[in-house]
Image (cartoon, rainbow, N blue to C red):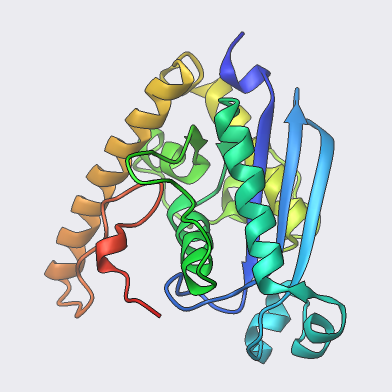
Length: 239
């Protein structure tokens, strides 16, 4: 059975900010999907322990007050999310994450923040991971326009009700991944671990090209981390 016709798990975080080195988890969702339809769903609301900026609340709808009142302690939530992902990977179930280096790196940083075991044990690797953003950028390289999840949903005909709600985004990411796989045999016909490794190369190629473009534009932040599905830990500061 092709990987995209078997069990897939969508994963998404909504956070306090856009820097995975500093942001905290506010909500998270893990959604099991078979044949494009959800069959099991888990969701978390955490108290991040820091204020949630108003502009971020405007995106995902969770205020500092609500998180403090209704959210569970962040260390408990972070540990449970990591355990869930490790369990799927131990069973070789692909975890679908749109822009995986953001969500997985942020989760790994949260684990480090609370002195919890790293997402991946030394010598191990995170995966299998399917990243629809990486696949879409590589396989439809010259398409103009944004590459957000919302934009990808429009391109691939995937409904997205409630964007920036973790559960809705997790399900949409899986459906986009299935649509990419159906459209491009390079993705859909690959064995899952081969696809995982191919995505690593695709991301590294994109990072090299994007870094060159940023340098040409004179950007002060011209180095794009080529590591995937987690950013290089060596470039992340300790907390």
